[in-house]
Image (cartoon, rainbow, N blue to C red; front, side, top):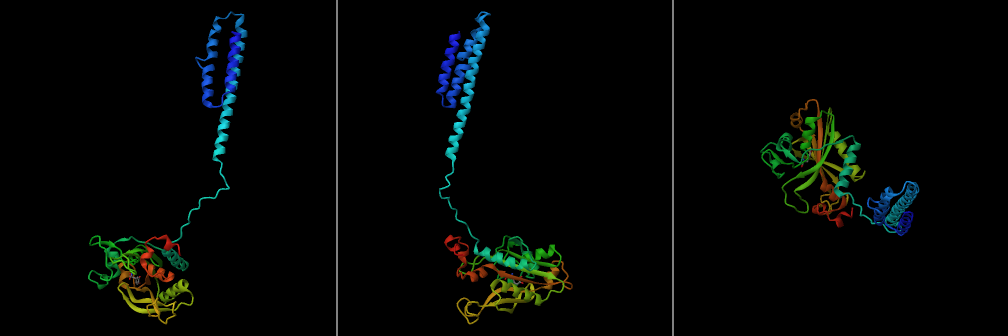
Amino acid sequence: MKNELLAIKEKAMAALAACRDGETLESLRVAYLGKKGELTSILKKMGGLSPEERPAMGQLANEVKVAIEGKISALKEEISKRQLYSRLEKEKIDITLDGKSRPIGKKHPLNTVLDEVENIFIGMGYKIASGPEVEYDYYNFEALNIPKDHPARDTQDTFYINDKVLLRTQTSPVQIRVMEKEKPPIRIIAPGRVYRSDEVDATHSPLFHQIEGLVVDKGITMSDLKGTLEVFIKRLYGEDSVVRFRPHHFPFTEPSAEVDVRCFACEGKGCRLCKNEGWIELLGCGMVHPKVLANCGIDPEVYSGFAFGLGLERMVMRRYNIDDLRLLYENDVRFLDQF
Ligand code: DAH
């Protein structure tokens, strides 16, 4: 038995010494130490030994077992270390390689100008307000003093969803929503999308953007309106801008005005940009109509206010000398990359 044990040990050690991977290692473990393994079957024969032989054989068998087990666990560790190293080797990052560059996007020119306008008004203490694009006829027209048969409705070709609901044709309904909810003092601008069923051409689109402004407080006068808009226009177009107020009519303001800036291309002499007018129309404005204040539960005997509305696309086109509105919506990066 002694020889058998020594032979097993020698064989096992030789086999293990040649072993390089976990799978072989496991099959060797089973072959020697497993339930039906070589060493196990010899140990089973121990019972047949004489009592004198047994202790010495028992000790030897144990030594063989411990030796084989020790070698197996040492190998196991070695193999797993080797696997780790080879994985680390493979995963090593080659820092001498160029990185993949991702093109960085830019702000759309509509957003660039919108952000500027917002910042100017935020700097004057205004808050940003918003309202739904799918709007009630009541907010878009009725509450703004534009009743059903009013001619102003004809100029705002409206997408109706049903007789009470439409796509807003202007951002002015946000005025109503803000005044219904908040008590004066109110100072907001409300930028957003508006819709009109216009044919698409170089200056028209069924979707465009307006920025609405509204101030309501005690003692607000036309001079506040003029001063505010002059400051705004000078911040946006430069301190030397010349601003002109022209009488106009809007149903929701009284009095109403349109505001022009002297053409910055020709300084008023007349050119292509200003269509020989010398002036460029910027926005509509006026003192909030007493009826509109009353419609929102604000007493026109106590409070007064001014409002204005401007078209974002026109401002952007003028700023960047863009002659076709459609370019702003086509999302052609070759175009957008220029700003
Ligand atoms: N909502 C008007 C439009 O779409 C623009 C406008 C004019 C808004 C005068 C105002 C305003 O708030 O006071 O033509």
